[in-house]
Image (cartoon, rainbow, N blue to C red; front, side):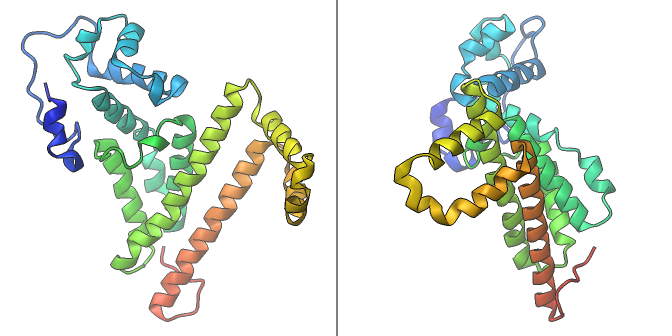
Length: 263
């Protein structure tokens, strides 16, 4: 078993995907395997978040003893890493490959990354905590790099373009996911929760002066109906802005008028 003390010696390079775990002798517990453990962990994480996942609770969910889990994993962090990569496996890479040009590929990847974050709100807090070098995550990262490379930006500009798009998606998807989770926690639809929150804010006399410059935009948002429609509208237009920005920067780098970009 990989000890926590051993991982502490190289925290920056610690990952279940980088360790060479010696196989257990004999056969594992009947009816249990890593895939079943990971599937159960994803369900638990979706329902309760990172704080509710423990080896004991996971074992109870699977109807086995906690010690049985250690046949396949060494720590809870191992399980989270496996679960994280499983979520990345939901991204439809075939749809990315079928897209006509880099703009379409970026849009598909951005939308699917956002959808993954919303389906699994526990993913966002994992950012930066794990190396995220599982096979599915690497496959998604490769498609992102290929799409950005096809923009025509020089190599040293490509990481910035990647950050502009996908850190935006991360932030957007995180807020959307946490808003949805909070509404569910208090037993309200997103629409009712949004309406109640905005109404409480706008009806508080102490905020009247501060709200004056915001009245027009708040009124405009109220005309777009469901919160889900607002999420979609704002995300799609923001993504259009980012893609147009990449096209403009490609043209600037090439010294030509904006509006080009390479497919």
